[in-house]
Figure 1 (cartoon, rainbow, N blue to C red):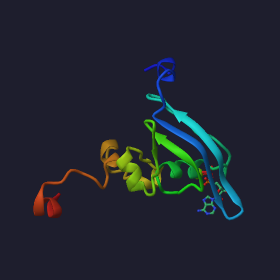
Figure 2: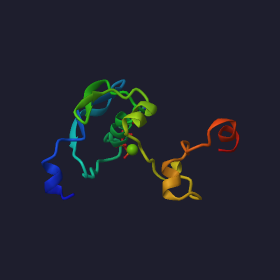
Figure 3: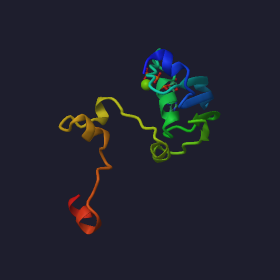
Length: 125
Ligand SMILES: Nc1ncnc2c1ncn2[C@@H]1O[C@H](COP(=O)(O)OP(=O)(O)OP(=O)(O)O)[C@@H](O)[C@H]1O
Ligand SMILES: [Mg+2]
């Protein structure tokens, strides 16, 4: 899909006014963005600008103090990474969160591999 095609489609993910404070520190201030199908959105900023806070807010690892998220037009409130995963939003963290002995797909599905049914799946996977 080209950029001009995706630009005419409704956003998959819309953030409005996302804000997070830690005491007197403003970690994220009134952040808005639209993410359309097929788009890749890069977030850049100085150290401490709030990039990680934004990503964590999308995946329920951080609960914003204010702001809204809409996924495919529906309001969502991810209170935990499991909520976000159920909604189809996940984070792949940098090197420390990756198992170098596994391939890319194994890393992506780490911890939720398909198991056999019953006790065999519990014990032997
Ligand atoms: N759990 C926390 N407790 C207190 N302050 C925090 C916490 N997390 C982030 N901050 C502060 O919020 C601000 C934004 O931090 P954040 O980690 O989101 O920035 P960043 O853009 O990801 O920085 P970096 O480029 O260093 O990864 C910083 O001032 C940081 O010290
Ligand atoms: Mg960071």
